[in-house]
Image (cartoon, rainbow, N blue to C red; front, side, top):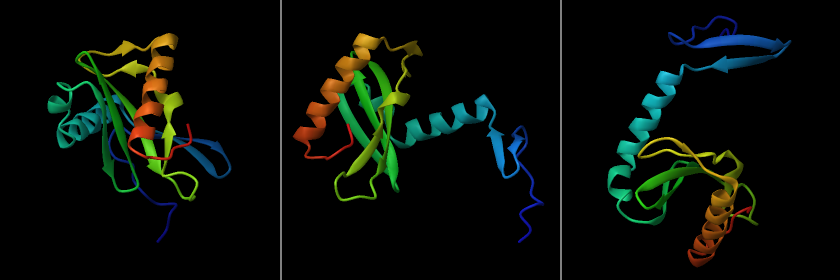
Length: 130
């Protein structure tokens, strides 16, 4: 297979940033379509009715949805490759409520979500890197 000859999907761009490194850009519309598809698969419209955390996995990664007063935010995680942790959580990526409308999560609010998440993980006996 000749890796030098390949085609990007329509709208995707690639920028060479070093001899062997490229920056791939995917159109925002496509990213949003993927997100909506994932929400449908994860039944987010039902989850939004129940406050708390809801974990949805797909393969070696997934999303922890946090619902508070009909607002939903997403916390990405991956299955850990070490015995010390069950999952690795990308909490620093949490910046906004996704539904019902996008809204920035404030620093204090984010800290509160983190504390609630730690309690929930402990109750579920899930070892994380938090």
